[in-house]
Image 1 (cartoon, helix red, strand yellow):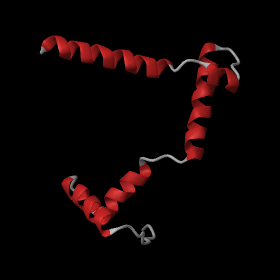
Image 2 (image 1 turned 90 degrees about the horizontal axis):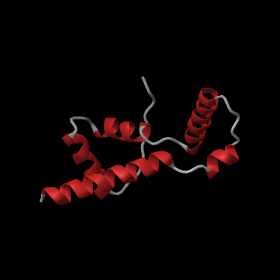
Image 3 (image 1 turned 90 degrees about the vertical axis):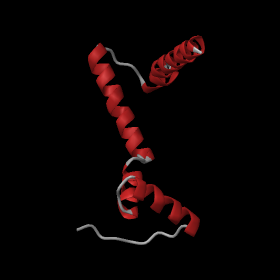
Length: 95
């Protein structure tokens, strides 16, 4: 069994989180555990980035430096922007 501890937050924050937890059918402790698990640390983000870059290097068969990755365009971000614009236009045409 995991060792428990106490964190201090304002009553307002506690009550708000307790209500959200209740609406999700869980205890406040379970909800806080879920929130914590969903937030990666800077170290975890760096590890994922390094792993993703290794996969890309293996797939394309070229050695790309981290500096080259950092200068590359945000392809996924651009795809999201294009898709969002298409959705906005489609909704505008439908009204």
